[in-house]
Image (cartoon, rainbow, N blue to C red; front, top):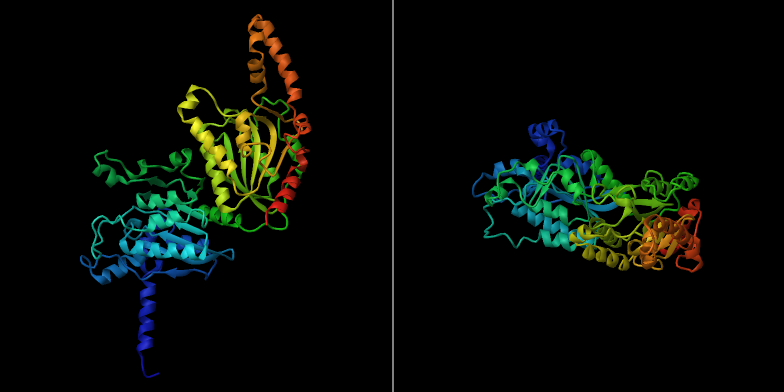
Length: 500
C-alpha cells in the first residue's frame, strides 16, 4: 500500500480512543479505587453484555478551548464527562449513560448536554429501557466556547422527563449527586443508591452563594435521609450490588416465563398468627408466594406500614402491594398513600400486573393524620388504583376494613380481576369493634362502664361472624375464599389469562 493516509488515520483513531479509556488515566483511577469506588466505564462494563456497548460521542471534549489548550482538553476532559450508548443486558436491548466523576467532578458541560440530548432522543426512537449513573456536581459554569447567557434552553431535563411512560428509566447514584444531576435521578422511574450517596437540588457552593449557610457535601441529602423520605427506592451496599439490582429489575420486565419455582405453598397456612390483633411480618408471605430469589423490595425505609416490591409469581413479573401490620397496625397513612399511588402508577407505566395483599384497619385517622394532608393523599391512592391500566388481583389476608381496604383493591372489591380472601379474614366498613361502638352508641351510653365493655365484646364477636370472609363471599362481595396454599396458583392462573 503506497498511500499511508488510512494507516495514519487509523493510528490517530486508536490513539485518541485510548485517551478516552481508564488506562489513559491510571493515577486518577488508582486514587478512585483507593476510595472504594469504581469508574464510570467499570460500572458500564459490569452491567452490559461483553462487547455489546455501542458508544456515542466518545471524542467530544469540554467547550473550553478559549481558556485551555486543545491537547489538554483531549487528555483531561474525555467525552466531556458523560459516557453513553446502547447495549444489551442479558441479551436484551437497553441504553446506558454515566457521568464520569473523574472529569471535572461529573459536572454537566454544554457539549455533554448535546450528547445527552442526542442519546435521549435515540432512546425514545428505539424504545430502550435506560440505566443512568447520575453522580456529578450539576451544571458547569466554566465552558466558554458556546455563547451563553442563562443556558436555560438546555433540553436534557425535559427530554428525559418526557420519557416517563415511554421506556423504563433507572437511575443509579453513588457519591455526590447535586443540582442537574439530581434532577435527572429524580425524574427516573426508580433510584438505586449506595450508602455514600448524597442527593440534593443544590450543592455546597450554590447553598453558600444563596446565603443559606456553609455545609459539607456529606450534610446535603445523605442516603439514609433520602431512603426514609422515599427519594431512594433501593438502598444497596456498593456499586457492584447496585448493578446487580439493576439487572434484577430489568429481568423483571421480561415477558412471562412458562413457570417458576417456589417454596412449598403449605407454609402459607402457618405464617399468620391465630390472634388477629397480633402483628406479623408480611414479607415472608410475599416471599412464599414469589418465585425463589425473585423479590426486589422498594422504598423499605419510607412508609414501612406499606410494603412494595417487584417479583415473579410462577414466572409472571408482578408488582406487589401489601399492608405491614408491624408498623401502625398496617393503617394507611399519608406517606403510605403516596407510596402506593407512586407504585401503582409505576406498575402501570411498566406494564406490570399488581397483586395486592390486604391486611389493614383502614386509613389512619385523627387530627394529627389530617395535618399531613391525608384527604389529598388518600384520594390520590384511590385514583391511582382506579386508573391502573394493568391487571390487579386482590387477596384479603386477614383484615379488610373500610376505605383503606377499598383503596388497596383499586377502589372496590370488584375492581380487581379477582378478589379472594383467606379463611380467617374479615371484611367490614370499619374495624369491627369501632363499628359496634358507632352503631350501638345510644344504647351503650346508658350502661355502666363494666356492663358496657362486656356488651361491646359480645357484640363484636357476633359481628365477627357476620363479617367473615365466607359470609362476604356468600354475598358476592368477594369472588372466593381460598386455602392459603392455593393462592399462588389462583393468582398465576388469573394473570396468565389476562396478560398477553
